[in-house]
Every structure is written in structure tokens, then in C-alpha cells.
Image (cartoon, rainbow, N blue to C red; front, side, top):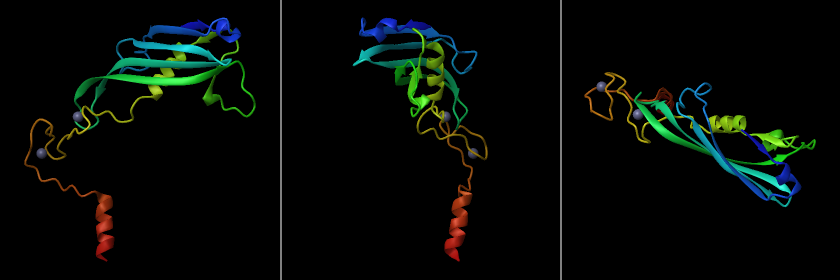
Length: 162
Ligand SMILES: [Zn+2]
Ligand SMILES: [Zn+2]
């Protein structure tokens, strides 16, 4: 998806809204249906500001109990659009667009993927699986005795004993 920003740059247009969908199932298999990208580019005192939201459903597997679940993921992103970078500027802080056409799909996809949570839990307080019998502790309690001392704490306990 390309947006022409010529009129925004010369000031004849103050803002431009956009909305489109991208299919990213090839790059990100957890996202099976197209994601929606929406937002606007605003000329504020001759600085072009892009704000955009990328939203989609992800099919995930819980890191603790291995249950499959779907979750809506929404990533919001803002940046300035410049036609070139000055020497001291960091390119991560800006979107560089030399011509009149700004390509948004790739940017949206990479920002979306970067915004994913590092942990995927079916619920915040998922109890996970029993380490002994494998029971899903969200659904049933089991009678296993789990030696749940963290090895690091054990070392600490030994140190304290000495
Ligand atoms: Zn879970
Ligand atoms: Zn158990």
C-alpha cells in the first residue's frame, strides 16, 4: 500500500487518513487472517507525523499449558516522516521517504511483529501443567508432590545454612 505524501509535504493538504488490510500469513504463521492497518499522516508545522494502528487475530499456543487460543493483537505506532536524515539522527527514530510515495505495508508488518508479547499465556494466571503427571492444572488438581524449590533458591539456602 503506497500513500502519496506530496500534498502533505507542500502543505496543500493537512492530513490524510488511510485504512487497508495485509495478508501476512506467509511471514507470520500465527496470523491466519489479514491484519487491518489504519491511521493518518498529519502535517504539523511542516513536520509529517505518521500514526498507525495494526490489528489482527493471532492463533497461539499457551507457553504454560499448551492450550490453543486466539487473541486480538493491536500495535500502535508513531513516527516522523523525513525526506533525508541528518548525520546525527538515528534512522530508527524516523521513516525516510525520499520520493512522493510512502510504502506502508512493510513498515506496518514489521512494527506489528515487533510489538508481539514475548510470552503467550492463555490467561494471566494460567497454572500450567503438572511437571509430574502432565495434568492441566487449570482444569483439575492432581495429587503429585512437586519439589518446587528453584535450584537457584536451593543454592541460596545452602549458603545461608553455612
Ligand atoms: Zn495456559
Ligand atoms: Zn500431577
